[in-house]
Amino acid sequence: PNMSEEEETKRPSVMDPLPGHLFVEFSKDGGDGSSTKEKADSGLDVERKAGHDSSRIYLSKVEHPASAKLHVGDRLVALNGKSIESYGGDLDKIRQEFRHNNVVQLVVDPTTLK
Image (cartoon, rainbow, N blue to C red; front, side, top):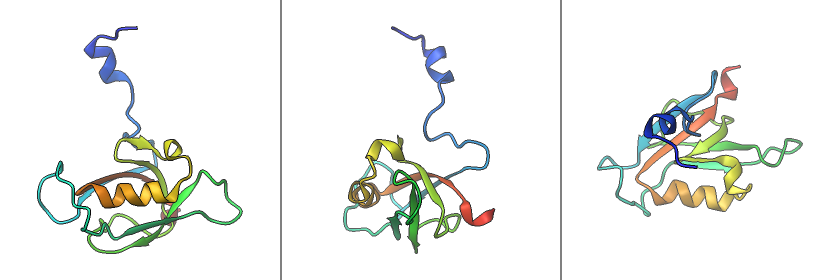
């Protein structure tokens, strides 16, 4: 089914935060967003929490250059245009995504603020 461009823009992106969620974008070392900086550390790491749904992925480390808006314990909702569910719970795939792009875009559920 072909959608007109107008209909296309109405469909919400996984990167559109829901109420209570937060969209965060940061660059690992300045520079432009399309370059890849495999060596630059995002300052982020992820974990699953015992006793929680295995599809729920949380930030376990937030260090420079990651945005100050992120906190350890925030639940990842989406990363670089893909829902966290689409990574199939693969923490290594998520870490690779953190490493691969210079600009990291996340949607998080800021659990620490509740």
